[in-house]
Length: 221
Image (cartoon, rainbow, N blue to C red; front, side):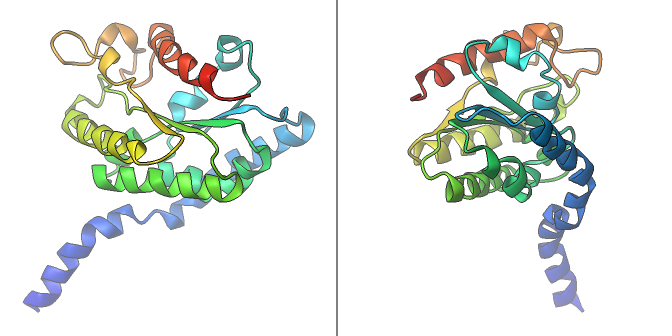
């Protein structure tokens, strides 16, 4: 009995991370993306922005990168593995010139470890490159939000692990959007976030743009 209890405790982190049965909740959002694609097929050679609500809420994305064709495939509340699961439907069809991902804080909030965040991002890279070998992929650092300040130690660890992983991969880049969102006291700057303390306001997105644009501009056309 004691051995069984020890085994169950060892499996708990894996069980908490097993979200395969939850992917179906996003089917309506993915179907809506597909309907949009049928009505307005994305241009070839677009930059794909994918991930969770910080991408979904970026309504000015096209205007912020007017010289580019961009595709916004953010769906709020999602974790990294959701984008991987649906990659055949919202990554593969586009043959994007480059991919920009933001996700990870929902993962940590739901109990994933920093190591799982890194491994899930690596799995996304493999899935995307199974379709488009060598496609440049950037990971926007997990943001330090006011609402989830308690997660800061895990966020720092996850970002460090993703950064180390990216350094071993050709064409995979970690974009440090974490540090600029911190104040001199090392805490998230409230003035960069909306009323919920979780999602950024325009000032926050302007910081993101200043970090993402040089990378996007350097991607071969």
